[in-house]
Length: 101
Image (cartoon, helix red, strand yellow):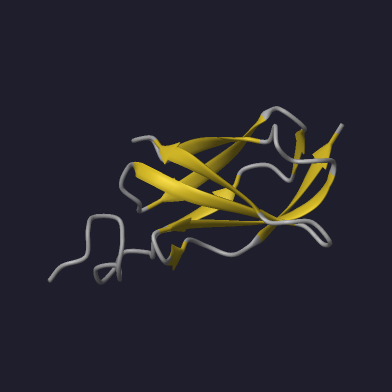
């Protein structure tokens, strides 16, 4: 059985699907931009982890041009580790994000 498009191992000569945070700092309440490569449009899960605070999970819709936006309205000021995934596949590395006033 083949994995759905945008998931599973890449074909030879093609880079693995990945997503990354497009900015290192964002104002609270503004949308956080994500950029993805080699990934079909669809739903993404974004996890925000912070020391001493519960993990926040948000969903984002990946557009055909490889970009997605996530609200930061529920995040307090501070430094977070951001993980982007689709299903059980983590896309790229965890990145650090600062949420400022």
